[in-house]
Length: 114
Length: 111
Image (cartoon, rainbow over all chains, first blue to last red):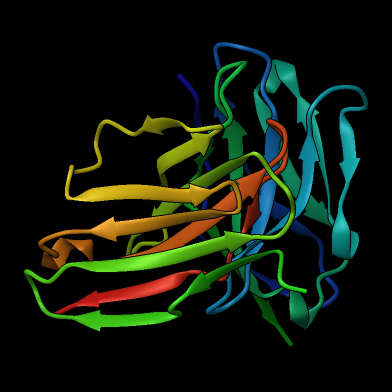
């Protein structure tokens, strides 16, 4: 079975500071990993994804994440936070090979302090 | 152009009523999904539907039923609504196992 743990339901950073949102996963098969962002009262938007190949993946809005198999992690980072980054961030892992359901973490709310 | 659209955006209704939420995707995807997001923002898969194959999350009550008139639509019917059904419901679609595209959500409030 697949599952995702996001450490820290709330993260606050100052504008211009490093953003680090943590995600650890559990999967019995090679995982496909995703980060989605949800702005207030909106749907989910894909930030980035890892399927195979390069373990450092770059996404939209300056975000990137690194797949570390040995640590079963897929942490999301951004070098310099912007006010517009304030949102809810969800890490997700795909289901077993041949299935395509996403299993989401409980989300991390990012607050950016001016 | 909206890729995945849902109607209505907000739905307020009384306990015991039957309601439907509509979802349409214009991406040509083969698979569509329904997710439920509870008050704590937790997202959980309810159904996935691919080429007339329905995969149901076993925890979903049978009061919930998806109906797909064609590949571009997957509607969600809910019978005998309960207070605990209050949530935001998201429709999504995908062409492969990698990327799902989400609709804007429907906020259901059961009074």
